Length: 374
Image (cartoon, rainbow, N blue to C red; front, side):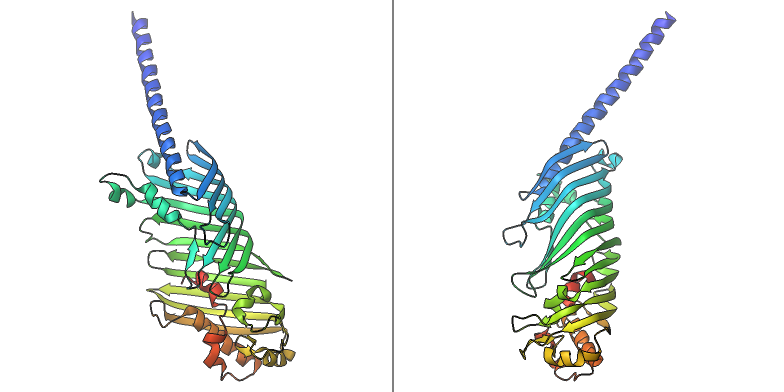
């Protein structure tokens, strides 16, 4: 009799455990289905994933593609061979979003600067994510304001392509290959915490392959930041449109590399950014067109002044200004400082350089604006 009671007790215990497992599995399958639906809604009509595999604690998206809109200069805004989401399951079962990590592998990302200087990345994704978060009931506003935390986003084995319409049409293209990037601590939707950022890669020019790196922290909500941007050994020809005002068809810059370091601090929309630009082995040819200029100096005058200064020209500068002031232009400020410094280094007249810089040279400023945070 005692054994029979013990057996019945054991069966009850097993039954309870089985019931718990069934409920847990059913709950997980429901959560997994919701995850798939949310991902597809977030990708939107221009996005696709060949496969979405939902495992316990992670979601893997294979061969992901986000096509560019009609006026996008590249066919894809983003693509990746694999994206893995590492999910905090405790929070997921409570219908909250906490990702320990997002890993993007073997990727391509295109970034566009429009003619008015606005930077666009992953077009339409923000809007589709907002729609995916919404509920068709009275709790919609509260749902859209729910906290979402991502500990780290990493990009590995990829490339970033910049298309800049502010310097020429069709947009000027700069490709950063062998690119890696990390974003640490994204606290949505407020974005009032510090987010740490880093990026590195290579820029291949006609005769040299240089490196680029950028890193620091930023409070995305108010743009406060402290970052460092570094270019090392980058072919000057890669920045022709930013340095050279060309009236003729022939190229003026025939050789040389750029080294650049900028330490940018932004607080309350005021920027203080000391930096150093070094031109190594700069070679400029006289195109014969009197309207061609390099950093606002006519190429003929620059060629003459460079005869004994081809090895290295170092220009120090400091950018200061209020980013909310419509009269302040980061691009123009940097252009003027570099033009004046270049003229001084070559020992040519600065008079005319200060007058015409804004119109005659775009400057490296366009290439740096996104790195400096404007």
